[in-house]
Figure 1 (tube, rainbow, N blue to C red):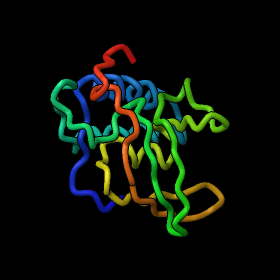
Figure 2 (cartoon, helix red, strand yellow):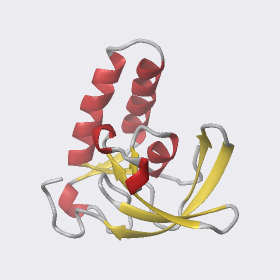
Figure 3 (tube, one colour):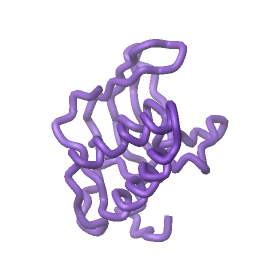
Figure 4 (cartoon, rainbow, N blue to C red):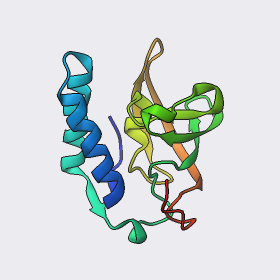
Length: 139
């Protein structure tokens, strides 16, 4: 659910996400469906070398500021599931919002189903930190 035209991924993120999707596919129920959704996203993504991704694209471990329908702004960091911690603003790429943020650009509006809140839409105001733009290739 998104108004963005393309999903952009770094080659490194695509490799890691594809591995995660394979692990999810091996399970049953919701994890398997999540893995299939992740594979669909990966198949439609524009994959570029990590050193060629533009600084306005949300990549893994990026810190993003977004604005919701009410005008409230929040900042979060998009992380792999094992690093997710809502109290620190670390949102998993497998969470509904995380799945919509990965590969989006600053200025894009993304729509997702928030558990217990229904359909929500947020606009990405800016990317405060992107590892690739910062030259951090170790994350």
